[in-house]
Length: 311
Image (tube, rainbow, N blue to C red; front, side, top):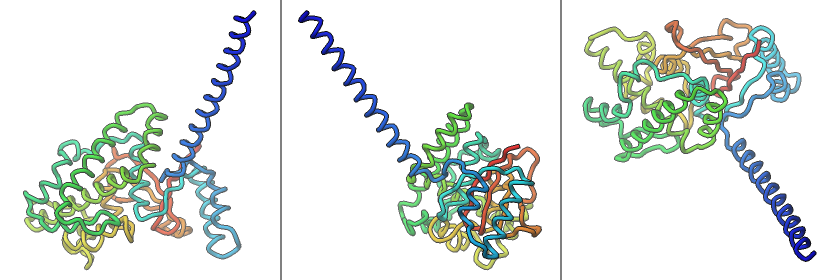
């Protein structure tokens, strides 16, 4: 009888302990999930028309036009949902890179042929661009002698994460990896700065080709160098790239450059241009048939979201 009472009491205690631990684990799991969602820079999908109704209430001319634009996307473009993207000055680079990763798109062809980890070294030493020490990493305006080391770490982060995620065939697993990566500011900002530096590298290469007249360059570089604020690589860096992530986003010419160097066709739905020929545009407008297509949605050419299609 004494033994039976002891075993009953032990069983009751273990059962209570198990229930307590299970409840604790559930609470901890819910807490971690809430923290992950809170830190996500690309939020889970939301209903397109529901988002439009919440964001554009009222009967002003602008609100009505925006709701009409969203309805047009729903009816004609089969866009039923969107993933909101954090509204900061990395918005467009984040939206583009997130889709490249989540779709499992591999490195562009030129990146397979070169080691991108060596690009900072090549620019600094082989091509004598000592002025890259004035490169700014988003809100961090100036780094001086530390520039080379920081750029190397950014390039390593881009290459490692891109290779790992694109090699993952399971869509759900790849999505989970993207959510984890894009909920860590310190990691994702390295990716964006790596993309910015690759843009600078391509501009330097094109500028040298134009000066030496070795081979023709893409028309987008003629547009870029035609601007008074980016007539050469140094002015492009100082007046444009250095402020991206801090006070400005990419403009139209830089979106052409982004699509060109990542070898993706970027289709953008510009809602503030509804009922005009500029409602849908692609960057670059000259692309190869084998390039993957990704889509963006913007209300103001500054902040971008990711549209999701459903048939």
